[in-house]
Image (tube, rainbow, N blue to C red; front, side, top):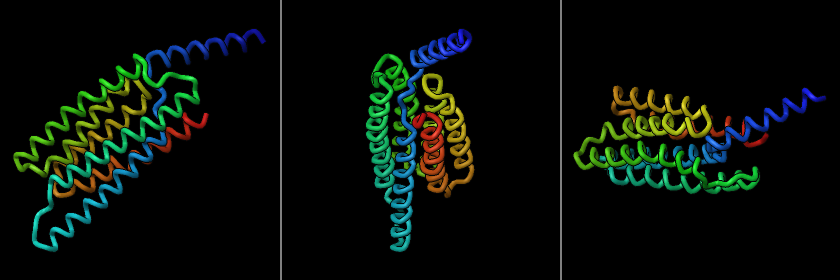
Length: 199
């Protein structure tokens, strides 16, 4: 009986230590919805590209960039809503020093990558925009993984690999983008939900 109490105490201490250094309020459902938003955006982008091609015109790169930006904004809002719900359910604070550190770690590569993509669009270098999005997003996930779930590192590495593959297979950027931001988010989000959120 005494040994069981010691084990429970150690588990409580371990849980408290993890919560003090890791942002654990991130909900898997937010990943699922982010993936769905990305797949819808990819479908709209594909329709736009096909429609423009049938008229003998090239795709409007700013429209495609706006689709990606809208997808990002929706994903952030959804992540906030689901994470707030999970934090309240778990009796945790959503916004504390750990969450702030995680947000900074995630934001720096994302902001740099976003500015780099805008620069490429301004210079009419469209082929590398999707690869750059995937690579910088992957770097952001690897960077933030030390402040949240370790599996974010695996997802980040997969995003980087997809981005690099896409940079060597120009012309298939939308497919790689849909896989990286859509399919992988749905799969990883569902896994996180069933592993962590339903406990």
